[in-house]
Length: 283
Image (cartoon, rainbow, N blue to C red):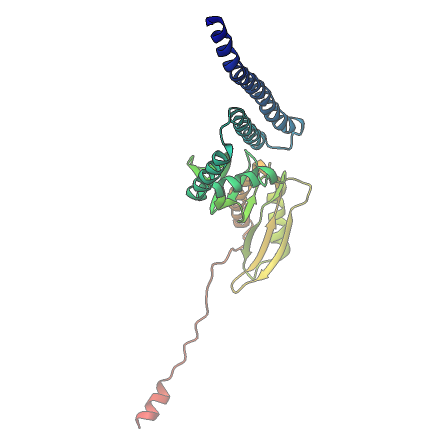
């Protein structure tokens, strides 16, 4: 009798135990396969950036992590489903939580979206001198949320990407050769050709000014008190500021040595004597 009862207990619980063992085994298999797929997807996305040097590594590492976590989320839901957990409510809960987090982090999400666009289109890169969001400096770091600049006086400026994307971006380092625009005025009484020759000589002897393209020196405007030249020498990008801040002094000294006047604004005042008319009115 006892043996019969034992057999009945075994027969009663064996299907349940077998079902649980099967679910656990399948859950482990799903989990292992899911982890392998998530890891492979992450490596695949990162590998795309390594095969193409023009693509930004930071962006693809972020996208790889996103792909990995999305796959892991589906894997966890599949594992829970094996044990009879109602996953529909979990998916709805995760969706609601994601919406709440998204609304709470609107500013951060806009910075993230702008950072993705900056890393895809790459209007600038680390090492470039840019003028963006009203700031000018050398780009030292670009991440998903911010761009970090270093100014000439060694200040660190952290700019949210949303303030940069969609606004005007001036990349001073995009082209290897830069033109440097400067303007100089001479008096109307001076000889234009002589002044141009003096300026050309200064540019020709400057160590950082290129011979090709040739410097551009022409009269731009007949101003109120002066004849204004536009002077545009060309240089390599790294020498831009050296040329910009050294040439004006050299040209000023050269014009002084050659007796060419650089005028300052002045006006002629005509004084009209109204006294006789005032006397007649008094009479």
